[in-house]
Length: 491
Ligand code: NAD
Image (spheres, rainbow, N blue to C red):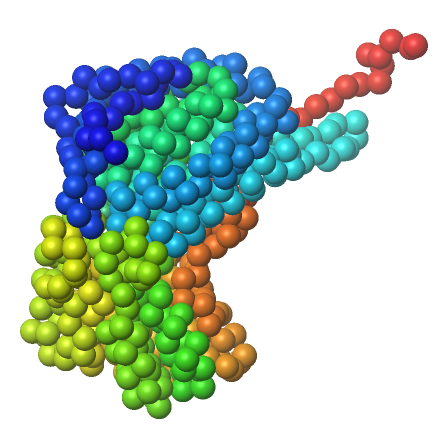
């Protein structure tokens, strides 16, 4: 891969940005520069918005059955280019090849579900709401929609939105993460090959200035955002102040509760994958382990073992189980938080700082880290670390554990490991988080369920994926009709 300047894709053409500055796109495992991404100015968002608005006028009239044919073609192209996309994700985001393949599988799943739009988009009709009067509710597209996405799933997250947006008759502008824009560029090359009319899908690279231009652009009617909570809150406020509909998914601090009756081998394996998979850089990564009662000793021991033995290295090596974190700054921040945990009284059972990774001297590696006896009220127990670090907290009852879960300002995910149906039911009912796992460590909803963050993990009403997406990308129109019989000609 050469360190080329990346292009934007506007109105069906690849165009060089007029950006004054470019950022390097860097492989986090090797520090190799893979490309240069433009920080596109607002004028390029404007061009994309004009193109999308012009295209939408025609696109809305394309029958839904014809619109989804482009998605069927995209599904085939994604399958054909699956390995190349997975390798690109690994190279720019650092995760393992298995994780990148899993990510692309979930992306494709959203294309498949959006192919059901002819069923999902249907409205409702009721005859005779009063004598001789009928009423119907139809769904129509919102117009031009924008997607602003984070670094940690470069191949998947835009798919939570755009397949549904275009299938329902909208046109789109995607703003990839400036840290990992290469995968989206490849995806747009495939989108181009589907023959989709120009202007329906546009891509503008950039960072804050580009995002602000999206938030303020009068033609853009809806914004889908995924990223950290402070930025999600900002996007939601500024987008709403400009009269747009906004769905903004934010950060997380996900707990896993282990009851004494949990299967130790299975819980350890699944929980370790949640703590350390994708180097802890999933919004559904667990980062706090709460043991209840007697689960404490055995689980502390098995988890420490799982952490110490996880193979860390360059994700392109198939034997590697965990890759690097995204940037040197991220590594520094994670190591600083580990130190804060230690300074706050936690004991370091497994220390992943400054690891020696053969061949990974230039990479941003932190090995799996386990902090034990963490104070439930400490900063480390409450801050999103977004790295392979687990804080262990030991409590005595399930009620205390649920209280801890519910004191979390985030509400992305909470998981319970148990063999008791009654405990599982209580947890499912009482835990204040939008995605719940029972004997599951990463409770990622399939594409036909909403990605249901709560509290500071989500700002908005309708979430990503499935029916929620269809509703987000359509506005309802209610029509009340009267056709008096006496007006009819007699045939
Ligand atoms: P981020 O918030 O730094 O960036 C996300 C997007 O916002 C990027 O496209 C970026 O260019 C843009 N951006 C960043 N700062 C901005 C600013 N000040 N003004 C306007 N735009 C700005 O997030 P990230 O570091 O790329 O991703 C990691 C975060 O995303 C974590 O907090 C993680 O939990 C969260 N995340 C959440 C979900 C979810 O579904 N809830 C999924 C994946 C990631």
